[in-house]
Length: 507
Ligand SMILES: [Zn+2]
Image (cartoon, rainbow, N blue to C red; front, top):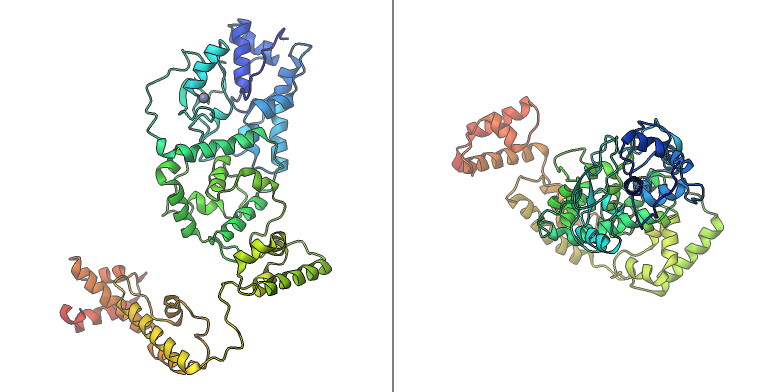
């Protein structure tokens, strides 16, 4: 039984409170101390997520009003590490921290085996340390400064420094921060200054997680939330398929690979299983809270917005709660009026004008909304008489240009198809209209059959290889042109190409 207990400081780590208790109590024997604290000896402890807290509570001085809940919510990293876990998983961790001694808390949360590791040492802010020493006569370990990925002190915007207290030991020695454990090395404060603002934003979000008990969401809900936000950013299709390459590129542009590397989250673009790819996919693996925060910050969303959201769409295959037909019809009618009363206005304007209505429709009746809402501001008047002959001539010129462009491209050849032609055009709405007779005849005459396309690719490969001084062999041409496998038919085609043409006339 302890006969006193220290006053707890703001955001103080449980480990830190115990360390100060140890220092004040003057107990030097590890065994005696463990017995005093946990009633038993030799229980492994975790520095960021202490276990068996009930045992400590029962040893507190009689007049103490502290509860296990105080310690778990206010003095451990519980809220950070479980923020993105389901309610059930969070509660399991909570129970472990209260009174189970054998279960591995970190394993339950997916910290063990995660690519994002907890900090190796306890960190401190040199300015906080100095201020504490002058004001309080002692210092303490702050929770927020131990969050993985936190590189700066939120109060002073100074770079955090590693102390010499190892955080990964399971037999804790309970050391207070002082001039021995916290050596202020002349660190280069400029080193990471490029990332200061990015990281301070990250620490703010982490602090939000630590200070609030947000309602827990299922992982599937969170993934769908991301998909919705990505869709709004044009980074996912209407159906909810994420445009992975674009997402990866924008993510790297936003953070830079150097910063991502500092955050243990570099993206290997060549890997089919890099973390960003896996992150937005529906699988049951726990994701590190650090990466959730990176994703939210990238999406420019505060963590609280995710937790306060009540419904998501995600992939369209997901069934949405049926809504009463009456409500839906009323809302549809309202929406049609908004559209009608604002001729010429497109989605973004209509969304602004109607506020909640658009959001409601977006969530509950997306397909219909999509059908009836104009996309672009300039709406053509339907009644307008279209002179198809004029249009035909206009399109013909554009299509010819597109075909010429495709054939003249410097890079690896692209096959001339209806689709590749369309991709080159700005306006394609009417291109399949049968009234565009000359245009469609031209397209049909000029799209490439597969063999012609192969020949063009082979010739291109030979030209490029000559430029690059690569020896011309059928095998190398095959590779260079990107024909996979060991296709005899293509090999023959390549050999014919080499035989029948001198390099000059290939060129
Ligand atoms: Zn500080």
